[in-house]
Picture 1 (cartoon, protein in one colour):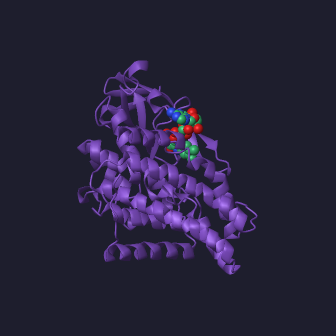
Picture 2 (cartoon, protein in one colour):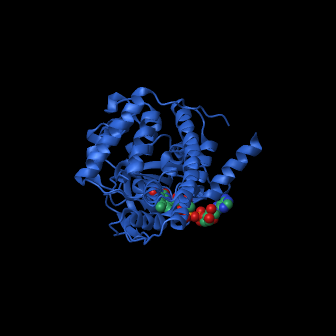
Picture 3 (cartoon, protein in one colour):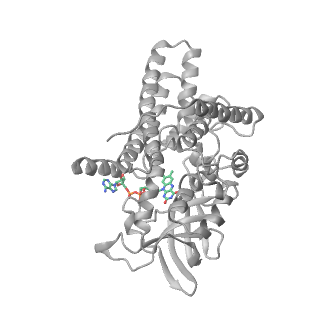
Length: 381
Ligand SMILES: Cc1cc2nc3c(=O)[nH]c(=O)nc-3n(C[C@H](O)[C@H](O)[C@H](O)COP(=O)(O)OP(=O)(O)OC[C@H]3O[C@@H](n4cnc5c(N)ncnc54)[C@H](O)[C@@H]3O)c2cc1C
């Protein structure tokens, strides 16, 4: 596995400072409050509009759709700063990270013209409709079906654990457009863009450990999806979905979900002049640095159009264990009173990190499944 080493240019360093200044200003003005795991649970459509006004949604996409054709590394820098500040970016996250690139690769001209400018303006959010009550890791077993009718498809079934479906306008939904065949279950799957406000869609919350509304059950009862909303080729949903996963698994959000806590831990240790504690915390920083280099290397290969399935699985599996370790180590180094409403930032970040951490190694593919991908890659060498 060879990954490039990326050196940031002066312009990129300047861009980082520009993003940081924007976030500091909004923190100061009280537009948002820093939160751990904000990329998944910090949905704030008004904040997404502010980000859009900066030209920072879909920033790598073609100018023909309103994008600014910036590099993947620029986007990486932007994302790192959002995560470090714990900014509420969840509303536009999936459309920016996955749906846009999916449509640019497989979407029709009409789909791109209709959706991409709206996403870029912060007016259109997407959910990801993969998991079902009986299909998670074994995704090819999905049973939600779409039957051909005049002018489109009638969808029946259910998706579950759907992040932010209640805030999203549409969902890229993996459905069966041909009968289920146990021997060839990867075949006959297709991706449909489903309007979450269409008749027949019911969205019910699954309460998070924190009590917040984050993910949902989504039920489909004869939901009509026009032919024009099929993404790519009918029956090619499995291959198209796999292409999306590289974007989903390798980003800094698989390393930095609990970064606000790590930052606050170091502040607390410095205040207490706890040199032994700081030595332990610095080991976390060294680990973070290595993971970050791995993740940036993957971003660069993605930029060059290369294959990153295995390194992306590595980033996700090791990075999410790292995110989980931060509250475990923090609680041994500093006395904490974890409470979601605490004014003291350390206590609040501890509560958020502890309650969100179990999901880190499950969402986007469980660690065990990722180890399987890495092992198969090693065997194939
Ligand atoms: C916070 C959060 C947000 C999520 N958001 C979304 C979303 O927006 N959209 C969406 O579609 N889904 C979402 N998910 C669902 C997530 O993708 C699934 O939970 C995940 O893929 C695992 O599927 P499962 O829950 O059915 O568990 P299962 O697949 O039933 O796994 C149960 C256990 O068996 C193990 N296992 C399964 N297969 C294997 C194997 N082959 N080898 C070894 N071990 C195995 C797993 O590692 C796990 O420990 C979200 C989940 C979380 C926690």
